[in-house]
Image (cartoon, rainbow, N blue to C red; front, top):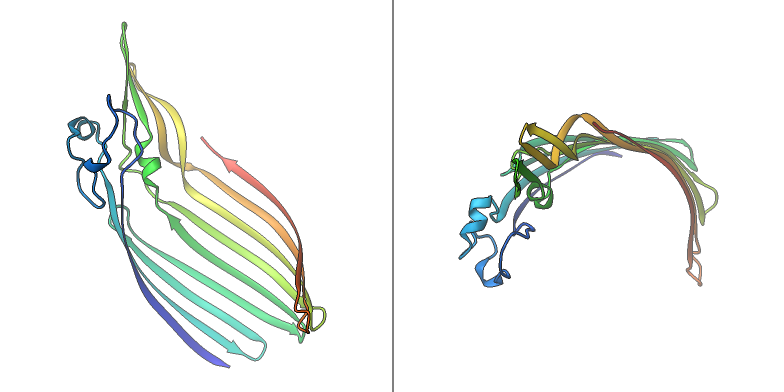
Length: 238
């Protein structure tokens, strides 16, 4: 029993070429080099705002574990700095209590953030309408913001015998600052169709999961799991 501490640092350097289909001739793969800042021999892509998508993500995490008699707990925090989307701090908390020798109740709460992918950023369109024409061109959404996720779980684990357990868990996951696909009128002659953040929308999933597990620790050493999951999702979109 007592305290334990864990910490770590990660660094990610990523680069990719966004999906596009706006050229009059096939794209030459030699025109793009990983982690480059531009595409060679394609001035049209620069004019359209289609450029390589490079970013770094630096994160640091720390967790404290506590174990004493019937109680176990965990408190953690993660800090992320993304070169494209800024910083975020996400905590995590979990606790369990041994009601009996063979029964444990548990609960946890955590948050996370999900930056938009290059697909979401570069797959929006704008259209200019006149009396005689309709001109459609790409509209990269470089101001997209990350989505934020919150997860809550409450459960109980029952050790039926030395070889078998029964587990029940209630969970809820919610996503805010949703990235949604929308069609909007910018003005009398311009339309937008693509991805945008919606502060007034959210989505989530709530459910219950039951699981029975059997472990033969003898000579045969075979394992079996039977689970049943019921979940209900919801969306509030503009």
